[in-house]
Length: 192
Image (cartoon, rainbow, N blue to C red):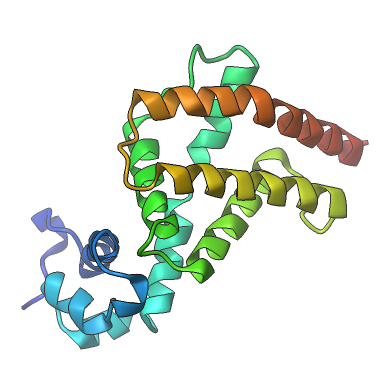
């Protein structure tokens, strides 16, 4: 199949393969997903797959990194400081959460879950300008990331609807407020 023109409006082969990965993960265990199955369903060949990705693991890691719903950190912070009325997720955050639930669900992989946790920790640290090489910061970030993974694990297979938003709101009030306050204190100490 020839490469589509840039102005054709068709998704690139790379984007199609990432979308196929998420689609396959919804019904196939991660260990059974292959480069050939991804390429076939994305309507390209294996050479195209290997042009963009070194392996299934490489594709999966990039897909995970791109899925971290970084907007949720800002949304929780805005909610806790009275700048947002609720923690209702936008469409892109909801889509990212649904994909993340696939990682944590029965077809996921412990390695990808750990990758997701590390990406969450990094996102949190970058958002608040704190360094993960500080032990107390790393412990708090790890605790938060593990909690989020646990919550998403319970959500796996369920729709991310208003009930999920309500749970997120309770969790944000109870657990996120102290962690965000901690991050602000660490940040202001490092600025002095």
